[in-house]
Length: 502
Image 1 (tube, rainbow, N blue to C red):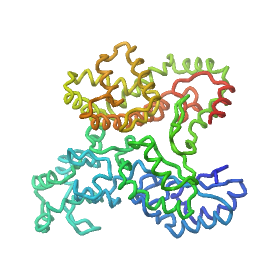
Image 2: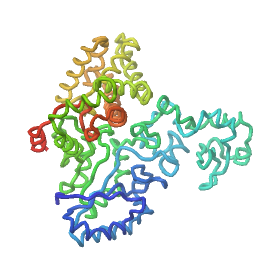
Image 3: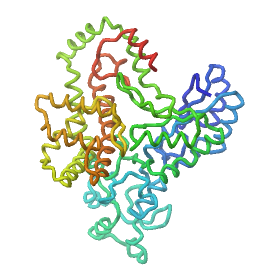
Image 4: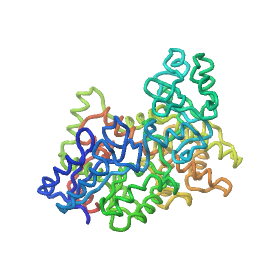
């Protein structure tokens, strides 16, 4: 059944399945066709939202667990209502409460879950959860070797957190390890772990795993891998196949390595009747790819259009003039947007940018293409900043035609900058993104494309929604997710056109 009206309930914070079940008759009287639930799977103990999942195959005990969920489903069915749940394939909590993550910390690359998480295993796994550098924290006596209360095994104890030691570094001499107090010996033990503790301040520069936006507590998942998909979707698929769940809302689809392939696999598993929408922010004029097997987006573009149509189009210039008078300076939103994006590239996502740059330079070296680091750096930086949409949707086969056209337009726009990058560097990066490289470099070029596409979205979100919209508030109603950062004139005709398209 296609939803005609949904009502979202945020579980946790006092909202349980039984409390929701008691609301079902009221929702039915409102004319609601489907209850739309926030993430229901087990998350960190302090979670207020549920997007920091620690076990994707268990329903959160604190809100009623499996039994409470089934009581809610029974009440919904008795009243003729359906259920849509929010799922989070892009990330999980990088928390010691997450058994998979804890296993990775203990066994490193040898963990069965080492490839479940999007980790750069060319170096030690970074854990940016200290209040200062490791050396400073050790010197202050904030770190010690103690038995983990949950397992009894030796661990690095930092306040209430117990980081497991690699078995090879303590087994057979447990008493000796637990008796360590010498700081140099503790530091040496730390160096022999598959992970390294570090200050949270160093995360933007040195993180070794893909995160959700800037949240180091959320680690990216590799659902493009069949095993990872199976392990993270086992309960989700069961709930759909048994008829308990009628629809899925996919959180942060743009974070995935290959959204199209993921959605195709998901559709194959849940069948044609399951209602699927994706959380996707569309720029003005942008459409969802035609070959995505979904019913649409969660509606950010509708909210933005609705806010715009309620603004008096004829008064925009007067509003802008009044705002600039109060502020005492003219407002150049394009310049402000560029400044916000520069901040994100140079500081907030410095590590992601540096990794992408290193990959590009490595490919250039393999292809014996002479490219200076500073030249490629400028070109890559400007290309990222100039992106007008959240991302393209290239795969191992390259970019689709519409995205190739978009990339060419962006490159031409970058060439018109006051201080443009060298054309040769832009051409080289374009070749990587389109897959126009020799077969020997295709795998690395694909990796570059995936990382590039996974970075443009967070850059846009953090620079527009979380920076520009907080700096510029000429019309707060227009500072909506999905709205254009550069204010323009609106019209009722445009609104009707957008609604027909939707």
